[in-house]
Picture 1: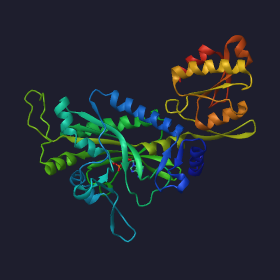
Picture 2: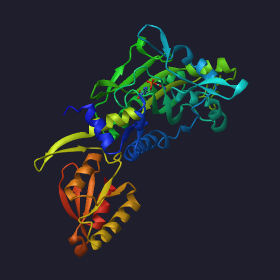
Picture 3: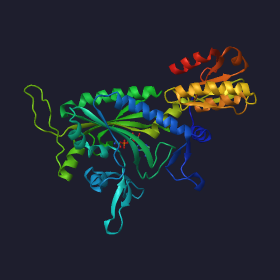
Picture 4: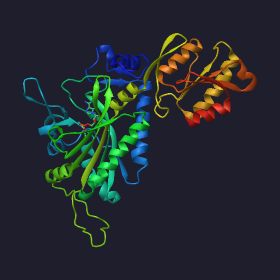
Length: 406
Ligand code: GAP
């Protein structure tokens, strides 16, 4: 089914995923706020990324570098001179946000970072000095990026403030091709975990590549407004470390700890493979992929077929009637048991059961658990599936086991 962007924007607002920033003042172009369910969805994606690419790897070092950096970083990295988009009149416009730090005579102009990558490059020496890693190894970071995009558009696609998840993977110059292929495959596996099974790959032609890249693959997703870049994989060579070594006067060479027999232990500047993910674009792709409509009982139903791993709510618990204290008491017990174990569990006793199912369907909750009078007699509940709408009677313990396994 062709999904319309307006439908996603409207569901995201209606159900508390994403709101326009400072909306009561008319908003701010290219900036959005995440509400409770959007935060949960975003955290789940981040956690999956972190477990897939940081904790699962022996040779990955986490970073959380500051947004503000010495402005010399951006001169050396080439961003001051080349991070530009042409304006309509043909002049050049640098898309880095300028800001100032300090007061009076001490004031200096700096920038909000347009990529998290530079915070990693300038800490390369710190990590090598403190952890003595063997090559290859990576440094990973999740954090905000800022770009004063000339025309922000398409909801979360082109923002002025966004979240990035980036890895700089340092390799021997002779080994970049195999590392590039390893990351290409790893990124595809990650997209599949998010339920994105049709992410295409575009080998970006030289004239369209960033100034630092010798090879780039854009991972493309079919957004409602066309096939567009979702994430990127770049071979940044030794461009950045070399540039920072020259500009700072500090050696950023790597000395091999254990060269192979007869091998060379001469220091060199490692090369870099960079898998870079825009978190907000992933959120938009996941919502697009998951958005579905069907007909249930003669009525149109909208639901999100989110993979359970990313769904903001794993299960919702309802007492059949909210004015029957014995049902509410039992339902609270079941709710607490599920919440203690699964965390992302919601309580809902508003409106009739049909309305509660619809609300949970719209936010992508895989299962709903209803407590009714039979529960009081035999400790069974109704477990209802979002995707099939089928209901089955299971023991309370059984429902927990099933939910654990999703
Ligand atoms: N460090 C590499 C780098 O910054 P990029 O292709 O310019 O490369 C990486 O950005 C990713 O960040 C993109 O693939 C996209 O997912 C996301 N991204 C870039 N600009 C964005 C914007 N204005 N709004 C939302 N996401 C953006």
